[in-house]
Length: 345
View 1 (cartoon, rainbow, N blue to C red):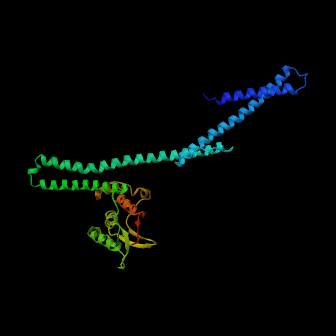
View 2 (view 1 turned 45 degrees about the vertical axis):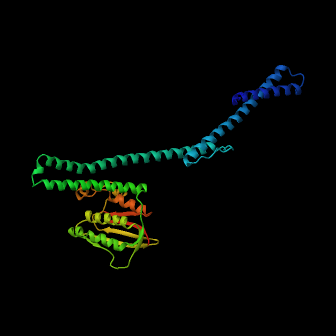
View 3 (view 1 turned 30 degrees about the vertical axis):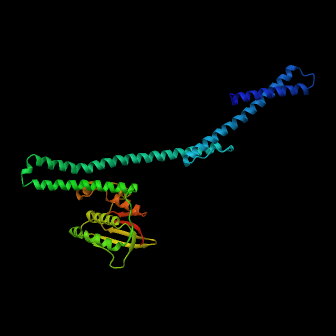
């Protein structure tokens, strides 16, 4: 059976009310009232009552719709699936709905801005990858073409060009390996294998390995003089990568005849490791993006110095994979301090 629409039901109710009022008035009013007067008065009262009934019905109907819409917006914002409340909201329903819709609009605005930033980042990343790979590829192409054009038979250049091509290939492999390492750290495919070890000994080994490069620039690498062991619980191989990156960067971009200090601090359940230098420092505007892939403060100088531009991004991911944090503080003309924490061993 086809259901009766709310409007038809309301019309039938109004007719019934008008008829009932007319019948009651016909019985109760004095006999000197004519049919016309009774009909007019009954029709007026019936119309007023029908209007009142319509307003009450409409108010309840609208509030019910607002109730459902408000629940829909709330559920969408909270990410839950709550069924509609049976009771109607109060007179503040429209105000609540307005607040929720404004909040929803702000959420969408923030999401759009975030997606826009990700799109910009994606474009920058693809551009940086192509640029980093393009240089060694073009170098290899040039060396190979020279050798094919007769240089292969010239002993004065054939070995030299092959060695240069090999260095360019090594650079490409390094870029790909670094990208793969970052991808594995982000997706959790690269598992951290923690063990208990003395971080001060590991830092000394890394510093000793970089001493020749540091001495060539007149930079002094210093560590705490006391020999007290400082045990941490972490992945020794990955933490070595972190220290190598930070110390190499300090030497590579530090000023001549400067100093790089490796220090350790006890901070509750963790050990804080600092790599600090008294170099030229980093401008404040660059600090928030310093750990991004391929981000370089001084692009021309950085590429001349070598490296893939992925070192600090890898460092950040390694420390975060240990559920720890890394920070950087820098003042132009005064130096830079990188600090990260590790769980005590």
